[in-house]
Length: 143
Image 1 (tube, helix red, strand yellow):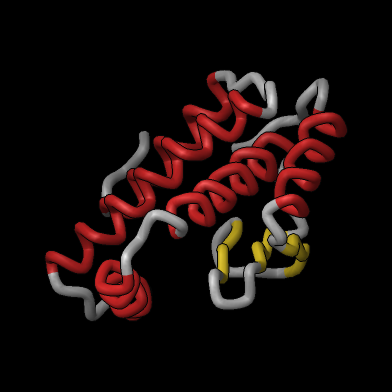
Image 2: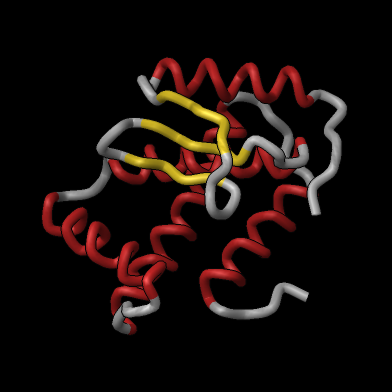
């Protein structure tokens, strides 16, 4: 779905500097999905074969997770630590599913704030990535 971006190099450099300032490592490798943030390792793994717009959207979103994690108390973190594996294993309760969806939604909101702060303009390409990702989590078709 992604596409090339005119200022990709500028955007990716800004995001990498932001991640470095947050002491978050970015690695490129084969990952399930487009990317994942691992709070315990302070690492974002991004799929190495993403189109430019998908990479920027994914990296910004994963940085949004890092920002979101700073706001959690221990109880909330324990809930999410159980909810995400259960969700991916297909054993999540309805409340765990809702916790995952809400966490994903907040990460997209924070991603928009990060992009604004870094002066990375977000176009329809970003909104499409966001809507598709959230639809996947909700089990809906994005078409």
